[in-house]
Length: 110
Image (cartoon, rainbow, N blue to C red; front, side):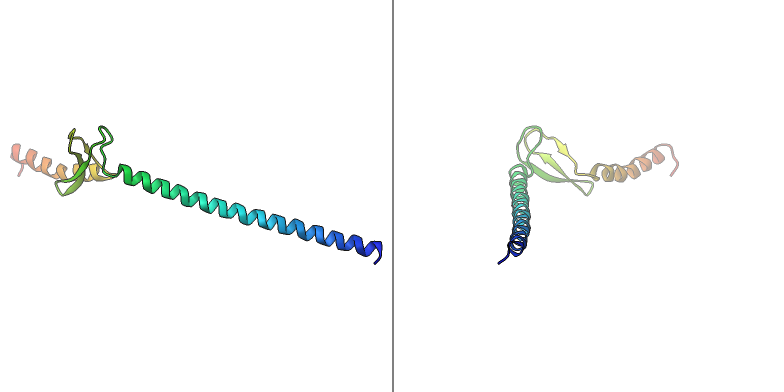
């Protein structure tokens, strides 16, 4: 074989080796990223289970109670009441009508 053919062949192999190495590195990084995401999700789920319905103040178990048909979490130990997003607003809107009716009756407007 001639030196030119050898040089072309060497160039072809080195170019393809470089491509194969880059492709292998990309696949390995994707697999590591997916594995880390799965581990993070498992850790987050385990943490959620560990702290599920536990009082943020004292750490005791919480129970679900109903106040004017709005379910809220109440601590069995310290009596703290905790609202999920939107529950307090819903409760205030429901009781607003009751307060208005009370004041209307009080002032004889009804």
